[in-house]
Length: 386
Image (cartoon, rainbow, N blue to C red; front, side, top):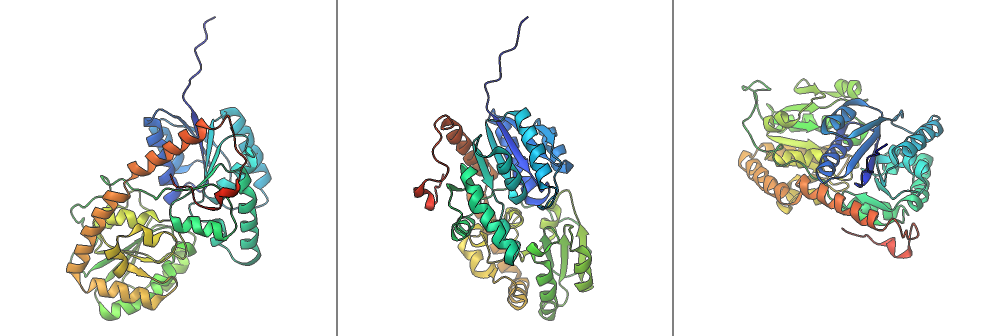
């Protein structure tokens, strides 16, 4: 009986939890590029829109039942993932974010070339003993990691300062500059109103919308007809609603944020921590300047002209209000910064550059898989840039 020849193309397995926000967009962008490059792409995740979008691209999707945070169910999640990996038999595993990085590396334990992408380090999200435990795990887990992919040099330095000794590659985030592009201003808000500030992100402590809402009355003191729109959903929604002024609109989760970027005069993301957020890059792609807190890779994501006007300290409502009000009061400056931001993103943060560098990294790791080096050689105290 004739048997078909085995498929010689490498199989990559992406592990994802969470399955929304920036993590989902990165996984989808990588899968699309890797399928185009001729790789076989499989993803293990708890379902949701990410799973649906990956299937539409032609990727194989396996359901992995796992909650967002570590907890008593972790051993079962690891066992389920180990069985799934044994069935898929990938040549390389790419784990995205803290939870998938934890369960994935426990399941694989270095038997398959493994890439871990933190998408912001887990220990930045917690304090006290929990943060100490998270740092300890990341140091331990590095022995089962062939490469840690950071989206900014700041994220890499955060890992090194925490004692995570690994082989690092820094690949800045990218966005689809054809999709996130300038266009006509949509009629999402009453045209009789004043300038519009838009914040796109999950409604949670990390993204700092509570700081923005505390800053907003000061903005109104200088720009009384300004309006603020929070785009996104999350666990802090009701708490934030109680803090909000009547000029604040909650738009909820949206399938496509592009119309909101185009409706904005100014975009803001007051995060407490990040690796390199996608929302500001998307806003710049649409020709809108973005005010950011100076955390993670924020400074690396902006051209120098925007950094001078648009970076403020984290958790500082007064500084945030001052930057927003100053830009809203100067529409020509806002427009000029938006144009500069668009040119910057097109030149340095096009998603095609990002996905090509990750695919090149896979080829490097797959090429060396038969002669595996020790997990963490001493020279890897410094970054290895692709």
